[in-house]
Image (spheres, rainbow, N blue to C red):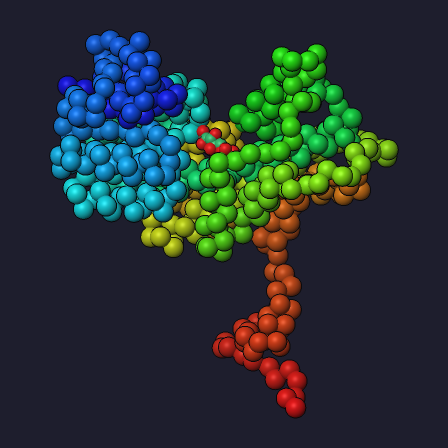
Length: 461
Ligand code: 6PG
């Protein structure tokens, strides 16, 4: 009898199954796509079993069965669940490792619960390579069921530099997929920040691809120790297969998306979360498609200020911190609204290795939330407040220069505006309240006494 089963054997499912086998557990694999099973069968050994029907697959598993569904999110997951249900026994555990929408996971959690099946919606990050060698895992659902699969998940997960597994029980219902969605929103935010810094490096600082590659590699050892620094450096130095140029200069500048970052923005709007960097990153992808491209190329004829590269590194470091801060702020608001008890240090730890947004800063975030510390925003923590004070002049200088040069910096500007606002005691929303009360008698609160007020702004004729 096999200890674990995987449904869906395209690259993610196959690699996760191989990871389970390589971690010492026996695994069965099944796919509706026969050629995928045939390809999987090439790895067959005493711990790895290909199966060609759902019944054969289910019957090959020890009870309670532990089944990971790793297929395209959406309708296929519901169809697979409907086919699986008659074959399962009460107490079996299903994990959905796709990028499912958390609303779907909430629904499926309760539907499966009604059948006595434990459902775990699990965010998986790290792409193909991570799936094989150690992904970051964000499982949410039924905690008792999680404990049953924890030994396998801990074995296959990425490990932090201290050797701790990048997996923890997130919380009930769809909270695991929610945390993955927030991970992806942060991913969009930080990626857009990188692209804005790249734009300033090439257009204002006049750096070549090779020079920029080196700058990002240096930051990866210093200011921004992050997977995204590492791969940015690699992307910038890659030669093209089809021409003698660098491939970056021939990649069309239209950003695609499957939309998990957009979902974070949707729920952020629902919750009223001030996630400006994520919002601007989503919109920047839209703009990359919507721009007419009729304008002139931007060229900078002004001086290149001293210390520009250092300022850009510091701006990126602080911008990255703001993207994380906004992610954790939304998580906190979601936890309150949906009655989830989220453990922020554990979530930070889950992201320290294996996933796309991994960086050394996540350990600082873990420390900021340690010992049950409740922060309305990350910059209330002494370390991050210090970082803000240290890097704010650089971020301001970068935005000033970009404005002069006419280079758009939607996410870096949003990061700056966020920081200029979060501790500001006198934002001008009093005027908005006055206007609302004027045209619609919407009433307002006062800053000097309790109660709800309305002013008779004008005489009715
Ligand atoms: C990950 C990634 C992964 C995927 C993104 C890409 O954590 O491994 O986030 O889930 O690469 O979904 O998203 P877009 O296609 O929306 O950019």
